Length: 317
Image 1 (cartoon, rainbow, N blue to C red):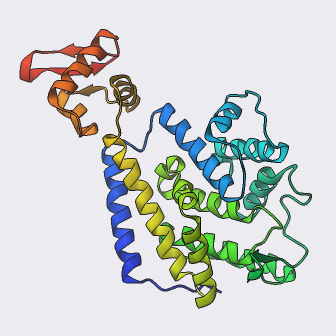
Image 2 (image 1 turned 120 degrees about the horizontal axis):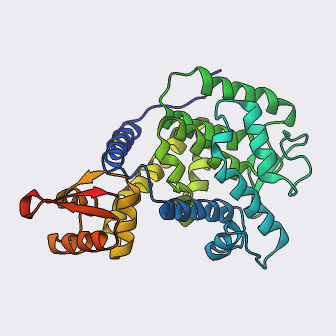
C-alpha cells in the first residue's frame, strides 16, 4: 500500500528551487567540500541531531571525541556521540533501500544505550508532550508489516528521491518502530536516501536547521498525523533542505581569511585556472584581494603562475 500524500504547488516550487541550487552547488564544485568543511559539517550534524534528543555535549566536546580525546560529560551522552561518529564516518556501509541495513544502523546507533538495539519494539508506545499524549504509535504487532511496506515503497515507487526521503522520514516517525532512537534514525535515513542521488547531502547538516526551530519540526509531524497523510511534513522538510543548500551556497559570503580561501580552492582540484575562476568561487572578494591571494598561493608553492597580465593563468602543483 502506497503511503498517502499530495503534491502541492508549494512542494513543486521547493523541488524546482532545490534542483536549481543542487545544480549551482555542482557547478561551483562545492559538492566536494574541503576536509575542514566536511569535518565541521559532520560535527554540526551529530551535535544537532542528538541535541534534538536531549544530548548535552557541545560542538567542542564532539570535536574532541572525533579526535579521540577524552571528554568529561554524562556517560550516556558520550556514548550517543561515539556511536553517531561511527555511523557518520561509515555512511557508505548502509544501503537506504534495505530493511536489514536499517536495523543494522539502529543497532550501531543505539548500542549500549538500549537493550534491544537493532530490533523492532515489542510493546506499545505513545509520545507524551506535557500531560497530553501527542501521538499513539500503531500496535507493536503491526510494526514489522508496516516497515516492510515502507521499504517496498522506497524500492518500487518511481517517485523522486526528494519526496521519497521526506515520506520515509514521516512514515517512520509515525510507525515509531523502535523503543528509542526513532528521531535520529528518521533524520539519518533521509540523509542516506538523498545521498544516493545527490552526494552533496553527505555534507549538508539540515539537522542544524531542525534543531534551531524544533517546534516547527514537531508541528509538521503533528499536522501530518492529524490530516492522515505526509503532505505537511514534506512541505516542511523540503523547506529545511532548500534553506540548508542556500546556507551552503552562502559559504562564499562568509568571512573567510586568505588561508581559508586558498585551502578551500586547492581542495577543489582545479588543475588549471585563472583569477576569474578563483573569483567565481569567492564571489564577494575584489580583484585586488584575489590577486593578493593568488600571489600568496604561488609563494606557498601551492600552484605555479604562467603567463603575464591578461594572459596569466595558474597551474596546481
